[in-house]
Amino acid sequence: MVRYLTSRIRKIRYITSIVSVALMVISLAAFAVRGLNMGLDFTGGMVTETLISPTVTSHQLLDVLKPALGESTSVTPSGADGRWVIRYALPEQGSAQGAEQSQTAPDVAQLLHQVSEKVDIISNSMVGSQVGQDLVEQGGLALLVCVLCILAYLCFRFEWRLASGALLALMHDVVLVLGFFALTQMEFNLTVFAAVLAILGYSLNDSIIIADRIREMLVAKQQTPTPDINDQAVIATFSRTMVTSGTTLITVAALWLMGGAPLEGFATAMFIGIISGTWSSISIGTVLPEWLKLEPKHYLPAEVDSAP
Image (cartoon, rainbow, N blue to C red; front, side):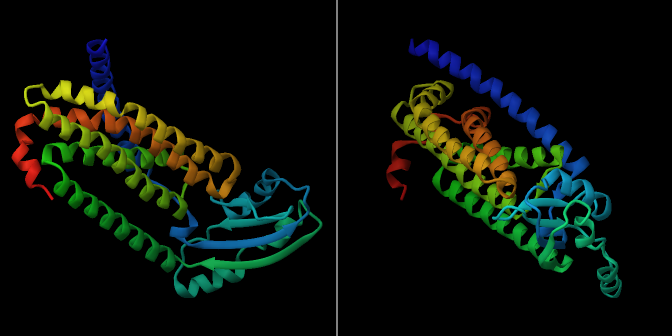
């Protein structure tokens, strides 16, 4: 029975690793060709909060706003019935032209009167392009620092062959999320970026669980081939992985169903990251060390005893 399970697990590991590589290639191609649909947090634009008739739907609002404000226009409910937050981009202009553009920008209240007799503009603010550029730079710096810290931790914790599997699994999860947003052209905003950082931590935790078990078994079973050790490590941690992933997906599903449009991007990114993080730690995280010839001799008992 154990031999049957290990043979099945090995086939699953190899097949999913091939699928993972194919998905990474597709995601990178989509990212290179289409790019990300950056939200107003990064590009700059206008944010208008308004109170209109409660009977007006989001589809009606978009039908009258998009022709005048552009296809990037989005509307999200804001608390009470009839209260909406409207986000739309303005054309990139120079400083003097930008001031002129703000004077000639479409009158949102006038547009809303087409679908509602009652229109109250509660607030109207602009996210400048410079603020958006600062967010891009700071976000990129945060991502770089996060990846460098993870890389340093993996190098300290594991032998490089085992660490490379966890690192590639980490990259795989982020690339798949970015590729999905590039393919679908869903808005990439600050909440989605926060989800990407969360996925880095989640995927790392999942990979470390399996990598730790592989390291322990490499020390305990010096005569066992590495593929057999990897199969046994996956079987030993499978129930824990499924329980962790399942409970996390329940939380994400609640955000998806009840969080509404503002959290849709965050929940979508987290859902993809959790699913890909689970299989990448089983496939890429174990197959790559095999390709790099990881063997029990790389984890001798003397090295383990001297580890901090």
